[in-house]
Amino acid sequence: MKPKTKLQQEVWNIHNKLSKPLEHRPFVISKHDFYYTTHYKNLICLECNHSWKPEVNSKKSVSNVICPSCKRKVKQLTIYNGQFIRILTYSVIQLVDRFQVMRYFSCWKIMHKNKKPVYKFRDLFEEWTEYDKNKSVVIGLNTSWSGDGFSLSDYEVRYNNPKYGPSEYDRFISDLNCPGAEFHPRFKKYGLGVDFHNCDYRLLLSKLERSSQIETLLKAKQKELLFYAVHKDERYYSYWSQIKILLRHKYKIKDAGIWYDYLDLLKYFNKDIRNPKIILPKNLKKAHNEYVVKKQKRIDQQNAEREVKRQENERLRAEAETALRNIKAEVFKNFSLKNDRLIIVPLIDDDDVKEEGRILKHCVHTNNYHKKSGILLMSARIDGSPLETIEISLASYSIIQCRGLDNKPTEYHDQIIDLVRRNMGKLSRLVEKHKDLKEKDSILKNLQHSAA
Ligand SMILES: [Zn+2]
Image 1: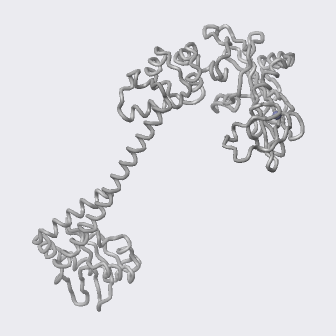
Image 2 (image 1 turned 60 degrees about the horizontal axis):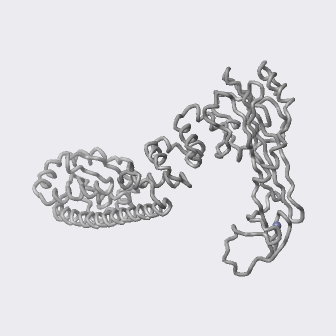
């Protein structure tokens, strides 16, 4: 897109006169790792193209290979798109007129089995910020999904609409900063430019302006904690008192992630995380790993205890179900309701319930209604064949449901309901007389609830 506003036009004009920062190229090239690849049983150094047979039965890990010819420490690289390519992106931070300019580039290291590596450079984009007016202009290539993250488009003014949140440009983070970064006077107090850290400057500046804690980490030269706070997660915020203790004791940290995980573990075990002796161990990795093992042990133990409990509950429930069924069979042995045509009988035995469900094609058996506490199942029949299944609540002595073939009512539905209702008194007197039935029923109810 063409520059539209006065500011964009001005930036575009200065940009066109800006020279390429070629002086940084040797530095960026030196930041690339060295590589080798495999060719049948041989290894080939992609730096000097020397080919050699690796030691047989070598116990050395493949990540620790040294080329016998050029003596470089080389890493394994597999082919990508028919070529061996590694890309590094980098930033050059400049002050141009009244603008703070963040320029981003990529350096492609293209390697071959029989040629020395070749380096190609691409200009990606630039962000020009005028702090006095709080305005930024982005110019550069379009973003894309492949390569260094940018397309083959022309360098143009790119519009960032803050309405849609951070753009691909805002989210872009380069692999490294070039030395000699120049900063707007407003950042002077941070003493930036001493290139000891590896944070992306754009992200670092925006966080510095919002957080005094980030400033403290920067000034304390806590490279690891600073990088973690700028690029990874915000645990520095919740563990700020611990960080203050760490700074006071000048504790050296190699892996902030492990330290935060360690603090999480200490909290899990209710340890005193204000005690420097506890939070700043002599060997962090060892202390961390010990707690990981300890936590895993505790989790395994809790799972095992839960499993034992579950099995015990299962056993008690099955026992209670059987006990209740036996009592029901005894209590309702001679209980049935009749009119001219219909007979309604209790449905207690497992096989009878299964048969009822099969004939009437409903879920009475599959959904274990016969094992449910607090109810009585009955079957309304004519000439011995089931018409409808009735579920009666033994708590309220009411009909919960009454269903025929395919869960539909039959022409006898109203008669069935009427007959059950008229005999509810008889049923309740029978049940209330048998205290053991009530008792077993409530035991089962408790067991079923605690399992749910
Ligand atoms: Zn070599």
